[in-house]
Amino acid sequence: MSSFDPSSTQESLNPYAAPLADLGAVETERAGDDSEAEIVRRLYLGHEAAVKSVGSLHYFGAFLGAMGVMGVAVVMTYSVQRDPQLPTFAVLAVYGGMTVVNFGLGYGLRHLQSWARWTETAFLLLGVLSMVAVMIGLYFTGHGGLVVTYLFVLLIYFYVLYLLLSPKGTMVFSPGYSAIIEKTPHVKYKTSRIVRIAVAIFLGLIVLGVILGVIGTIFGDVKVKS
Image (cartoon, rainbow, N blue to C red; front, side, top):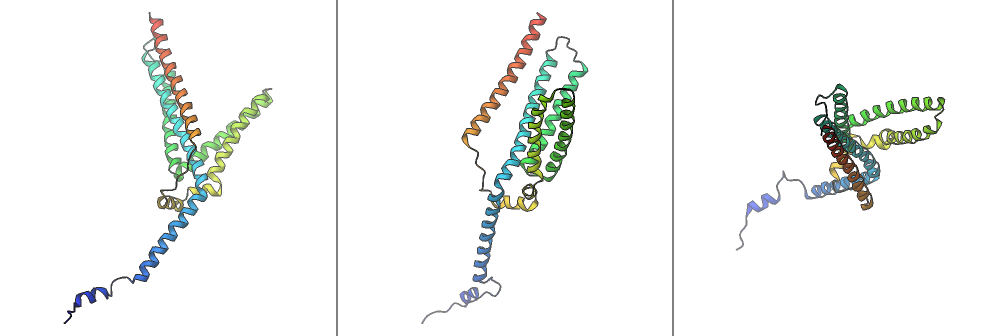
């Protein structure tokens, strides 16, 4: 005679369990949401990368500022008078402040923070106004040839403003896009190897120049003392 286990029937007919059809629908819906998030991410990935590259430039500015702080500190340490003057401290304070600001903006833009977007916009607008004033002054003082250089920099400012204030920029800095990034960590923007090598060489030359400048300052002071 076959045995009958009522517990197995109760488990299979558990009234509190979600229907299998509903579970399948939930999984399908979740997969559909992830797929839609990936489509949106790839649609805005280029703009996202451009904004983050501006943040990388601020990191680079922070790096240069830190190198400047170290250079000024070395000059102060090996100064002939051994009594640093006020301008030296002022330069040190300026480099230190620029380093902190650049690092903060670099972090904020790399992480698509809204406060960094509007802070960067404010700095850029001030820069545009000051550069326009300088260009007008150069034109009326007979130095119109220099206006072209300032105009080129001005175009870069306008491009960054476009990255921040365009509809795509608004989307990239939105909380909804942050949620999309969390859902699509596997989607990455690929930078070409040539660009990476060029950037590495450029940074290496700058570091080498700063090191040689500091060494020259130290040995120059030693020769003066001797």
